[in-house]
Length: 342
Image (cartoon, rainbow, N blue to C red; front, side):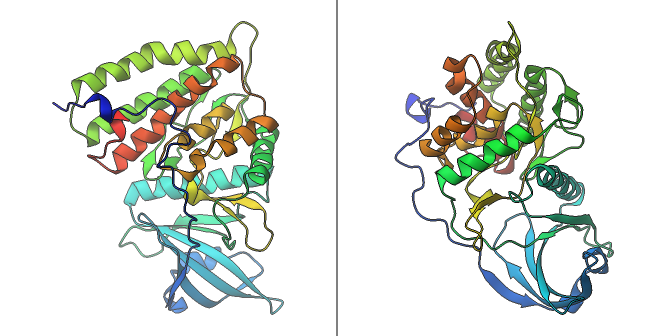
């Protein structure tokens, strides 16, 4: 049985802790050149109509533990060149869920705020059968400074939340999306945000139990949160005349999924785990002290552009609750880490 001392438990307010990263995040690098002739035929066929299917060059781009990123420079019919980003994952069914979910999230976000995300072009499975590989093809956007200016980003993100409209008027999404490699419980629709979030968290708890050692006290706390805390904190959002609107959220904003466009100087985001949710759920991943986004400046700037939901005095308690799926996702992808008790 795992036991922890009081010094192991983190305070509820984890913003602006001394160990919040404050070093600049290095730009992704262009690595070794890849023989363009070895590109899978499915990717070549998926290139947009203006491309001649003549790939001028291909280079590995950046580093990612679960995927491979490749910058493609293609000749166009008008003799110009255009760059694309190819993302591939070889995780069988998990890879399919990751790639399809990211494509559908980008497509939904691009329809609302086209400058905020790279243009998505296609996704699919490689023509070759072994290993089972899935690809995503998007516009290539040069990453400049990470993180972007807080005031600029705080103006752009509320625009996405405010302008988006759920196709059903409910919370959820039409397919499964993933936080990293962890499938979310998004492929359903609920009028009640409390019910959808309860499903989401319960799903994450089950996945955590499958990956990590059994911890009786942890199970008791999880049940209390599902049965007592969620109704107490989230049901008031849609009670006594109050209402919240389903907003399209990125769903996994952190230091490596947000940047400044090198050429325009404007913020943009990528690698979404999208769903229609309470807009405040967007900030659950920001609470973690391992994120530079934990800086209060980003939250406070956002609040100036999008009003806090009533009851306003419970914003921080809701934010703590909203951080739990992201901490559990970290525990699921890194079995044995300390995220379960933070």
